[in-house]
Image (cartoon, rainbow, N blue to C red; front, side, top):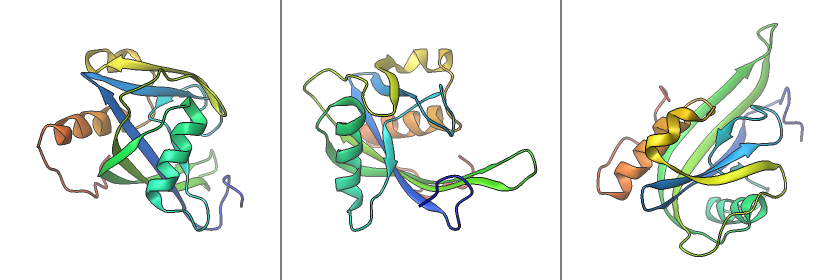
Length: 153
C-alpha cells in the first residue's frame, strides 16, 4: 500500500487524550506534515477495528495504554502536490480517549511528545484542523455535542 499518490483514500485514526486541561500532542517524524504537531494516530490495518487501531497507534507512538471513549469527528484530508495531483488522501476518525497513568515517550515515527495546555496550542506548529479538533473534543468531554462529520475542519 502506497501512502503517497494512493489509488484510493486511506483510513486513519487519531487519539485526543486529555489530562486536566492539557492534551497530548506528538511531533510528526514522517511526511505528510513532517515536524508539525498533532494528536497521536495512524492508519487502520486490514482486519483491525477502529478501537484496536487507536490503542495500537498510541502504544506504538508514545507507549501509553488508552481507553477509547467516543468518536469526536470524521475529517477529509486531501493534500495536493505542486502540480495539483493528489499526493495524500486520508479519511480520519478522531476519538476521545483516556489514559490516566504513565508518561508519554516518543517512539516509532514520533520526534517528540508532550501534554500541552489548551491555552498554549497557538504556540505550536499544528497540522491543519488540530486545534479545532482538540477544542471540540474538550467540549465534548464536558457534555457539548457537535456533528460528527465536518467537511470544514
